[in-house]
Image (tube, rainbow, N blue to C red):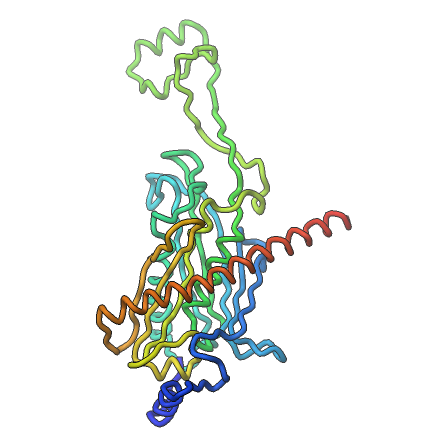
Length: 337
């Protein structure tokens, strides 16, 4: 967040509205700054990634930097907030150095706003991975996705969603194996006494040779280590965010802090592009003090879909390259033992 004077705001707006449009770094209206992505940066997380936008190549500073990490934990269904089939909970934290001019209360409000946008989009049941269930009706995985903003040089929501999607792509869910415990059957007299008692039929344990009984799973074990497993099911469904910065006669992408402070309205759109399927609009948000009408929003959604597809394809290619890179490093470490 930047605070600029009225003269600076007028200068930035007039430059963007000129013909041809002018930006301080020489980019076009729909051009992004350099984006760097690295996955697997947190060894103790189930999945992690770092995204930086506009970082200086000389000293590695001056850009927007976001780190996301996913951690899985087991929770009981029916006790507290546990959900059958698992759930995803997102949170965003901001380093005070990223927003040095904000008071602690203002920083808390900003973190809450970012968390609400991310959590409302990624925790929706329609994109919940199917392999978060451990024991139906009993145990499931809780996926905690924590995002930390280390620096903000503009376009923070796009960076947050890129880092979140990369961390979720990198996440491995440990494989589980169901375990059943059987009590050893006592002598016939004990069984006869049990018949005379008022007991729960589901708690009664009979002979292991009695095939008429329903086998109930009591617990589970992990065949894998905690950092091994399989990718999240449906990871193609995780959306990307695209921020359209709006001026009365145009819109532009990847705004710097000065450009963000000069526009009255921003439109956030969240799109998923599944294979051989119609693009899915997962949500949208209007931020700012400006106003817009339905006709303009419909036009912006069409443009936003086109831009978001380009971001999606570029991010998809980079994530696959990261998978190859990490697999190669793992093979080298194994061979060098």
